[in-house]
Length: 94
Image (tube, rainbow, N blue to C red; front, side):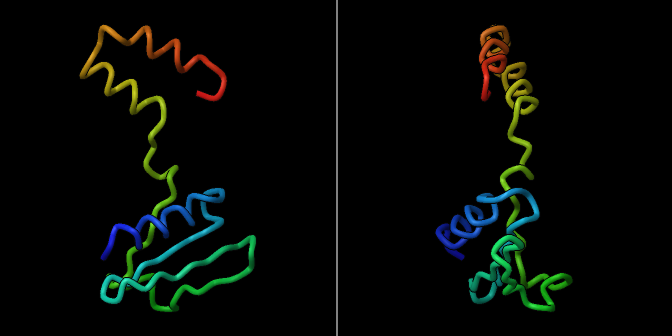
């Protein structure tokens, strides 16, 4: 499976709100199946739910890459910078 295949599917899933877009990759063929509630199409194979041949692509929010992860990293790796990082997260849009 190529990186490009996974990236394309991930970007599609993450381009909308969670659960609005889905993508599934068939491991054996690298074929990608897309589904979009807003656009009204669903290419997902019927047997994808319980079949290990398929890889469900997560949404970017599934990784929980927000402030708690950053703060854990700062506490572990550079605790002397914690005040500086807290100031950054107080800014709008952080």
